[in-house]
Length: 251
Image 1 (tube, rainbow, N blue to C red):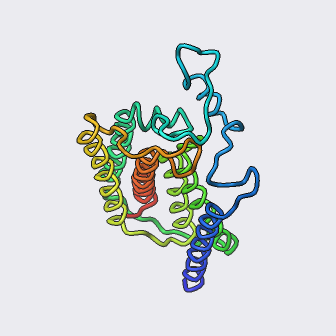
Image 2 (cartoon, rainbow, N blue to C red):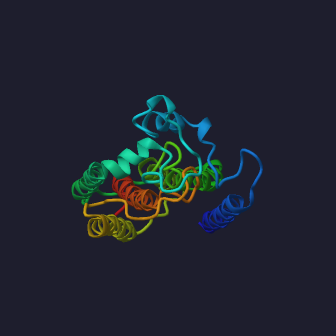
């Protein structure tokens, strides 16, 4: 058990180092094509979507996108994200509520489930899992915070982070408190509700984008969408982890 705990501590330390390296690269890497603060829109599918929707409606043949332009709609370079988290944000809120209902239903049905005798994972698994967890968490966070630039967002990113919880339990049988998931899920839900009410107060409609958009193509743009996706990611990761915990005998 001591060895397993040491591996978890090492994985946590590497996670901090990895995230620090990513943040350092975001602000310092200026090599052509690798500068993190500028998205190469012409190499992304979203660029072609924008060509069909942006520009002067009176001159459709001359429609084009100006990379770096500020104040462009909601600031999202990914038109799919703009639809999911801005134009049809109420649908996304409903999807999150459906996931919450599923999590609550599983908890009610599995509340009296008894744990069975379990065998320990092999040394190969327990050695490899911390590295896999590190990779899953970093990739999940990347997908969440880049959903406004490329395919991704809170749902897939949260699911990937939840998978990290699943594999750590299967390898180490080390549970996380179910109360922690409930607290995170509740705070994320309140955050989404708060964003909606703030939009209603400032712009006159629930979940309206009221934050500055920034420059199109920059990482720190579409602030409203980034915050909503972060909250959705926390909510999805917590709810899926709770479902996983119930299915594998955790409470």
